Image (cartoon, rainbow, N blue to C red; front, side, top):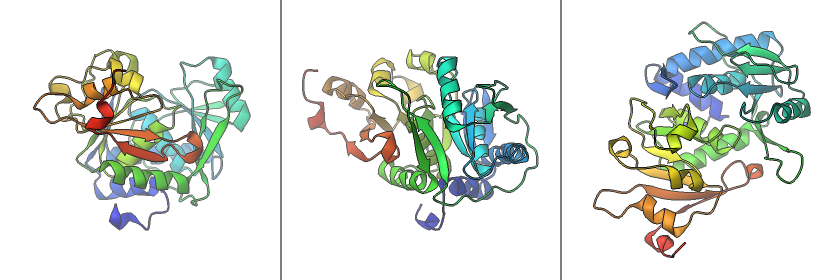
Amino acid sequence: MAREQDAATAVELVARQADRHPDRLAVVGAGHRLTYGQLDARARALAGRLRAQGTGPETPVGVLANRGPDLVVAALGVSYAGGYFVPLDRNQPVARNALVVADLGIATIVGSGESVGGARPVRVPDEDAPGPPPLRPRPDHLAYTIHTSGSTGRPKGVQVTHRSLLNVVRETVAAIGLCAADNVVQLVNTTFDVSVTDIFAALATGATLCVVTDPKSFVAGEPEPFGVAPTILSATPSMLARLPLTGDYWSALRLIVTGGEELTPRLLRRLRGTGDAPSPVVLNGYGPAETTVYATFHRCTAADATGDH
């Protein structure tokens, strides 16, 4: 990304990929595929709808879209409109989502038509359509807000600016060597901030984002037919402990990024493999939401895999 140092936001990097490589595959999942050109067109169409309803800089917009390309169109469309996206989880109690909506004063929910807390629903476009050029938010404008789990009390919204998102995207791309040839599996729930890095780091470099439609089934060993071979996987240790990373499906996997929980030596030994075939590199990342996803990465070695637990 050396030639992209003039970009002000990660959203701008994604738009540049669409302009330069419109026919390159951007997102797969839920049985659908979008090129960068199609992703850009649908995000622009959504942005036009949102702007017509009052979305602009510093406007929060809830995202309650189905997992798959719609999820990515929703996040990018909100960004193109100048607003900041707030991931919601339909698997959470309605009361929790309503609390998030009320906390931020969200007036619009982008998704498949659901309303939460009285917010106005806006559907994700399912066809390419003309739309206005993306707005260019300032680096100090908000990019997204992620709410903490609330395990120690009321969930707290962590607000992240475009400057911070761009910084973590650039550093993540450099740390993992992400490039246009990669196919990145997006498995983590979108209410966790790692998902934001999965999405924007992949799309900023022209890679293909593979959004898992049903994470529970996927982790249980039911691979989703993306039509491309995964090369990068980001998941928590508890997910990796259940996920069978064997067979042709995972033959191109070169990198596993994990974090959020303890990575035990026993699990690391399994991830690194013991045979003659090349094993994926394992990076252990750390960082609270307040520091924008990752604060540091550690490249795991054979020494880290020693121990009984």
